Length: 356
Ligand code: NAD
Ligand code: DAU
Image 1: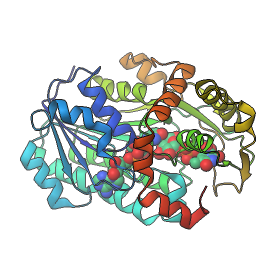
Image 2: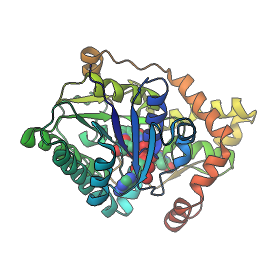
Image 3: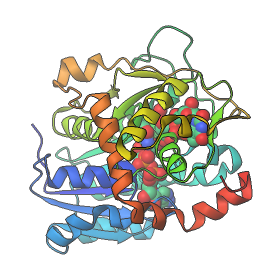
Image 4: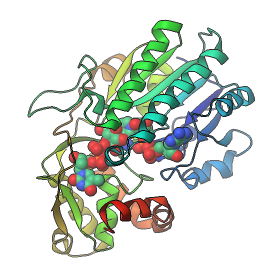
């Protein structure tokens, strides 16, 4: 089992990254230092790791505001903290934004990943006791029909600028391993849900729109299928791979939990109504079918038997329990939602879709 003294997390102010930092200092039992490198784009909110900052700031937890495309800044972070592991989450992550403005996705996801890899290669100088773990998505595999699953052998077939940029970054990671011997691992995960998710993604958007009586916008016929995983289960998988995964190997991570969007919303409406005491019909009346997302992938489903059989990882959260915990988190953290929505996100939405 690998151990690390200093982990450099990129994108640690985002949804999965902040949950990962909280997990590593908590249930994950990591005993070393964490350096969070994040540019604080519209999607980054350092409040999401506030408790870790209070408990460990300046001793075991450090924050560096830096763009992963800024080579001198990344070199400085390596020189200052000497990390022996990188877990790379920083990315532009929202498919709709990639359709409206692909350039930022190519910059951060492709050039940013390249910059990090190259700085790590230079700083680590052929060391074998280090690890670069790259966090990627099942969207690189494209779209499934009614049957079948994405396995690690499925050929890449990305359909959106977002997934194409992630596919490019995955190839760079593997190329750095094969060409330069950089010790890497790679994971491709399905849709995450949980606390601190930016309310442009389906679940938090729908929860907050229900609470404020706004339309619940469904793309196309609402029958696209996604495989949902609680964010803490994703993070336990990342930590398992970092400690036990084979260098140069990729691992699929999924919830084995497929839901048609509209069926998922029905369940969400029931839970929100139970938690708020409202009449579910009030929420149902807000459902609005809107123009489909261009290139909208129909179905994602993950075969995650490799990480289960080789590394012994398992999902620990049932969907119903995770969904209810998520709803409760959004109900009890209106301040976080208000602050994260008040900036660039609001103006971007208004410009592109009108207030909703
Ligand atoms: P997010 O959008 O919530 O957070 C991204 C974070 O990266 C933000 O804190 C942002 O400030 C930071 N960032 C963006 N550009 C940066 C740059 N140039 N330099 C430094 N920091 C920058 O994203 P997320 O949902 O937490 O996703 C994290 C990673 O996991 C991404 O790589 C994504 O592709 C991958 N992933 C996400 C999901 C999902 O369901 N959300 C599923 C599978 C994989
Ligand atoms: O599969 C992993 C991916 O999951 C990650 O790589 C991405 O970073 C993450 O954003 C997510 O991508 P999706 O496109 O699947 O997530 P999103 O929440 O945007 O949409 C989920 C589904 O809901 C999808 O079929 C589109 C649909 N949708 C989404 C929104 C925001 C709607 O019908 N209406 C909406 O308003």
